[in-house]
Image (cartoon, rainbow, N blue to C red):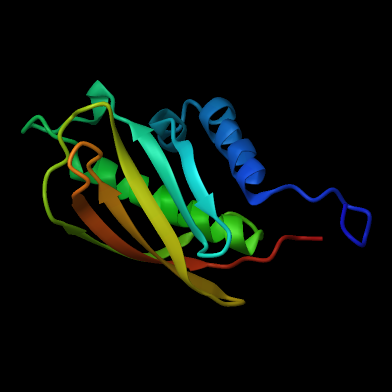
Length: 153
């Protein structure tokens, strides 16, 4: 408990709870269908890594992960890292830029690692990388800006 008598939840537990909500309660939505899993979370660096299982419906015509899916995974991960460390409302995306470096093979999963690069009162920026687990190579990078909307009392 904190000084106000409220229960303090670790960042990792908070994230796990949020992902359970997304994956179960929002299962019919695009982000719910992605089935993101928490791999790691670091309070000191304001960084998290989510693991996304790759599914047949995410493939493109070349047999690799569709670029729109990578972009959606990166957007969700950056939004989650900003949400996690601002603890305000879910931040809407203001802008996002992606750089596709190499294809992601349709293997078991892809890792998306994101960190907050700036966190202000009105907006935040985050950086992320999509990593191919088998090789450890970065397949895509992205920078996003997110609006910080305070929770209503």
